[in-house]
Image (cartoon, rainbow, N blue to C red; front, top):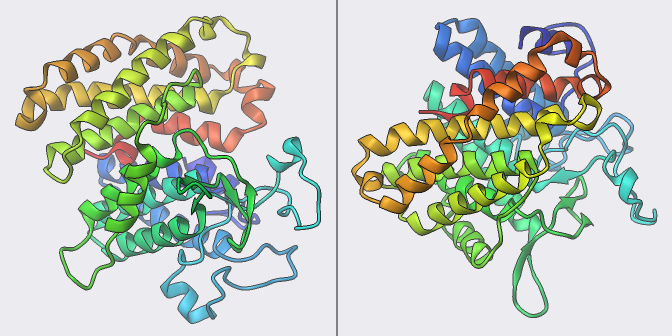
Length: 372
């Protein structure tokens, strides 16, 4: 994490290289190291990274004719509400212009805003609020949630609510109209997480209406996937949902069981292709490490069920978690493989070095990301 901070311009004179997904995990990692070691340096790095992300990704690109905060606020107000216009992804190419044809391969390299990256950043900000006790980070997360929700969530002609996968930097138009499979679930759980952490004050903004919208979208959704990062996402979201149920913030044991059941089937689908036998060139580290993080969340959930009256009495829940923890052998397989220097010399590692490094660190010490 120290090398990552230097390499990406957080602690060096190098030009800042910010990317929202990676930085969300990095903030959590620094918080985890701070909690683990009691070293204030790591807390300062987490807070500095938050500020740099907001200054870089909350503002227009250097190669954009527009300038300043993407929210349109002046500099003083922009710093007070840095997330209220959303946050750019941080891709290397500018966003597709309205008159440019859609190119699926090229779109992956173009900037804009992703809903599932914004929810990751909401979670990171909320973790900062929980660790430091500073409520402003929860407020920024809620302001981001409200902006993202109002821009990404829309209603189809037949009255169904959906979520755009990718929007333009200024949130004025969709760039990819399809919906990410787990985006509604991720949003629903993160919104509830923010609401649970928020100060109990009538003056604090509420996400009640937004939560209702996403609960509606989640009804009848199919969560199964053979993508390891997708499975990991299901597992860590299940863990967060279980914590919300445990602490009395939410009563959705039905949804928790649904997610865990889908996760179990997804793991079986994933392992059917014997992914750990594939050559390094055919493996994507950060996707596998997402699964490792999710499996560590299941180990924690197994331990928490024992001590929680709201969870321990559910026989089906205990059975599903027990079945999922049978797969924790994958954690060692994944971590040990990507810790080997020879595998970190591969193209698949070097091509996405920052995200791979940060998610490996999260897998090794998941406390900052998962919470307690």
